[in-house]
Length: 95
Image 1 (cartoon, one colour):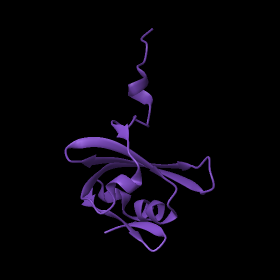
Image 2 (cartoon, rainbow, N blue to C red):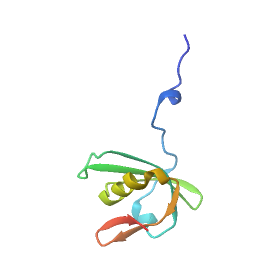
Image 3 (cartoon, rainbow, N blue to C red):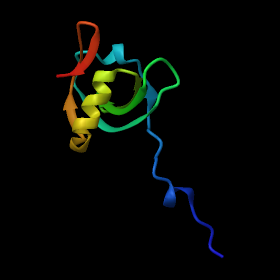
Image 4 (cartoon, rainbow, N blue to C red):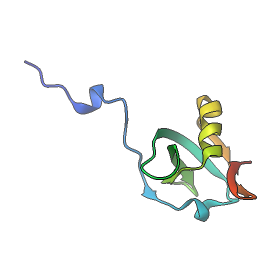
C-alpha cells in the first residue's frame, strides 16, 4: 500500500512570509500573489488572507475589509497583479 503525501491532495497551500499589518503597506506598490477568503472569527462576515510580495519579500495580510473581499471575489482570477491598498474614507480599497 502506497502512502499519500498531504501535499498531493490538499487544496490549500500555506502562505509564505511573516504577517504584516495592512496599515504598514498603505499607498505602497505590492503584488498580490495569492488569496483566500474564509469565514471570519470576528465581526466581519469574511476574512481575506492575502499573500503579497513587497520589496521582493513575501508577506501575509489578514483583513475583514468587505470592500477588499468583494474586489478579490470579482477580480481574483487576475492574480498575480500589482496594486496599492489605499484608505478611502473609512474603508480600504485597491488603486
